[in-house]
Length: 319
Image (cartoon, rainbow, N blue to C red; front, side):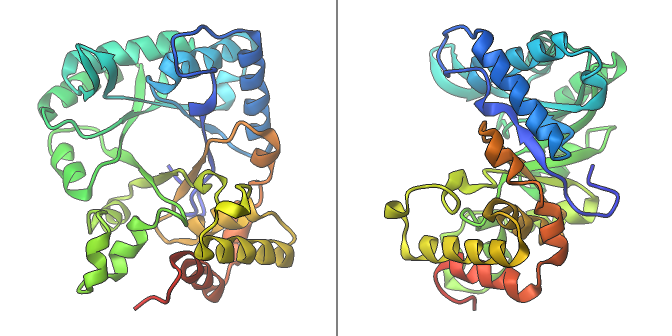
């Protein structure tokens, strides 16, 4: 799933498209916004667009589908990824998970209808379902693949052990694990160096997950990769000392490299040998364009610069 050079690739996350999360309908303005965002993302080389059936109560997929319907040839130029497994506001529950065979088939078919496409390139299982039967998942996915509706399978928010357990029943390889990963949310990184340190107890990330994905060729997709603008646009009055120092370092490195803080921030993720693919979710086309140099920054970032950003973000030295 990663680029031929082994580096991760930028992905556009569509959760911000479609208007409010409530049940209100979308209109021409939301469709036009989606079209502008898709064009901006393509303009910096993005091919993969990430969805989920629950985003904006289905409206993210729906407005994207409207753009596909009115843009001849666009579907053949991009890759589509969606997720299923989370159910919101159903059966008297605010949230519950459902990876039963019937639910997977139902939700994928609904997503295809909203997206106005015959297939998705990748289907992700959105969150671990404690009641999941891997054999049911295998049966549902096998049927969807046989029908040409799904081409590859991945997961989101799963540990290495959960992935290995699920893979035992699947005939198709899992190719993606999407996790929250950024310079701000560093559990995935801290857990790898805080083994045998009491500080490691502060981080809940399941140890060995990165290593399992790297060893089995599973692409790590990082949602929240821009840290919600914490280092590149949020009000400085809200910064902690560590966040302020990190933002300043990003600005400094961006100036030295003749690029943007956004590209440096994402380049830091992409420098990691796990071949991390950042998912960017901003609907601001200018900020999308500001991410264009991320892969190049990763290629040229020194070890000292990479560690310097990490130490700045954590607010104290590593062990």
